[in-house]
Image (cartoon, rainbow, N blue to C red; front, side):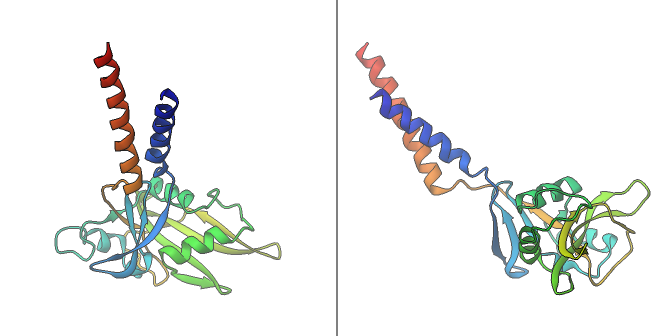
Length: 208
């Protein structure tokens, strides 16, 4: 019986923490429509497609987060939020070093909304919530680059735009926090394991 209890406990732990693995899913939004949100099931953050905020300035968008605003309930992502999101999307590193593995960059760009194309390759650029030391706002960019005769991508957060700047090929990285709902299988296994463990302890105490 001890072996059975041990297996149950280990199984519960594995399933309970399995949701910590990042999984990005497209979901609908009541205001913005079908597949308008990319939900990070690991963090519980919901990211609005960048295309819904193109050609709007930082000051304009940030004034629309309150009740009745165009982006009610959302906020600008910080650079830290954005970097974690890029990593969750499979992008291996950030910076100006090009990467010849195009798949994670193209996949994430298509997932969160393409704001421009370069040589037929999708790109996404959005303004973040961090103010640069010299003024203006940091941006996050999934950037196609033709480098040394090869198509490559890079993801970076070092470009800075003024707070009143608006560009047709640049949107905003907007997110909102939602509670993480445990997966039904994980919850059930956790309850079964906890109940079994409690019963075994009660039984042992009763025998003594």
